[in-house]
Length: 496
Image 1: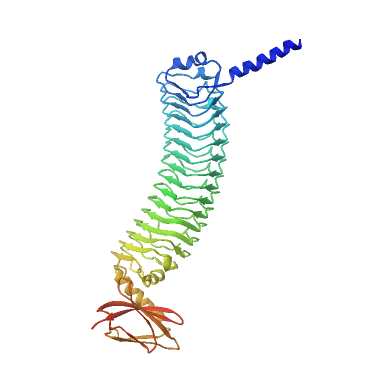
Image 2 (image 1 turned 180 degrees about the vertical axis):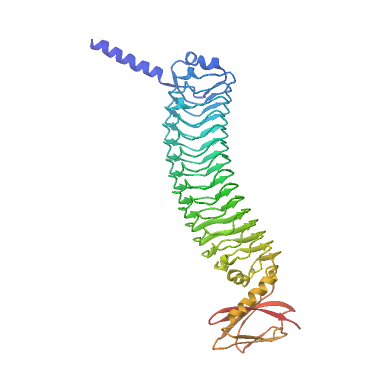
């Protein structure tokens, strides 16, 4: 009796081994229904395909012949099956070692038969399946090894089915799904190690579904979602490692939803959102690693909402036809590059940039702002005094219509400030000798003189109260007075 039981046990393990064996290390492609129907006859005991499984054929109607499969070692591709309506037959697959790609299956209405799938080692790619309405069937999937891309599925209205996924190792791309109304289904994702792209989903009214997302290591791009009115749903997001792009969302009225974002590692680009009236929602943002680029936002009148930004890589404001003021950037002190202000037709005030440390500015370009007549703010006037400063200002209103006008206005501003110190520089224009004096005990210690290119052409320590300028050619210069209390710059004319 014991011997008989032992033989039965041995037979069981032999049978189990036969029916749970790896096979097809180079993969297999099915292009006809007949090949699928004869699979178990042609490959007896094959339950774990070690290579790729490709299913693509114009006469394939069902996958029942594959119902013994439990593991795909590499990629599972299901594509260009015009008659396939379901994935019945793949019910027992629990693991895919690399990518799962389901694309261009015109009559496929459901993927519910993948309900035993728990692991995808690579990407999940769902593309151009025009009958699929949701992703139910992926409910037991907890992780995606690389990226999630869901694109151009015209009937897809929900991402339900993805609710157990917590980690995306590379990126999320939700693009051109015309019926998608929300991102519910992504609720448990907390971190994306790469980019998040939400692009051209014409029915998307909300980003609800991303409410647990706290960190994006790469870029966040929200572009061309015509019915999106706000960014609520991103309320827990605090860090964006790359760019933040908010572009051509024609119904977007504010940036509420980004309230907890403290830093953007790359550029912050806000372009062509024609209904955007406010940047409220960025109130806690402190640093932008790249440029702040605001372009063609035709309803935006001010930058209120950026009040806490102190550090930025550069500024580019162009073609914002309702923008009146740069108030909102008053706490900005450090800029790592350009100030570029171009074709903002209603702009009358740039005082919001006055507190920038001039030494951090790379160059200044202000052009085509028809209503802007005052550019002699503190940061620009200080920047002018820096040797080799790069300044190009033209085609604005009178007073800020040329670089020379701004330089002149800055000199007047300096002279007004200088009044409390009562300096005297004479004669001016001068030929050979320039006399300098300071009243109320102010001592002028050193003098620098710069030409109009910002090149230092003379440096003197003041001993006898005058400077010999006989070596200077006729022209306009800037003289810099270094005292024991302040530094003052004035225009000097040399005429011989």
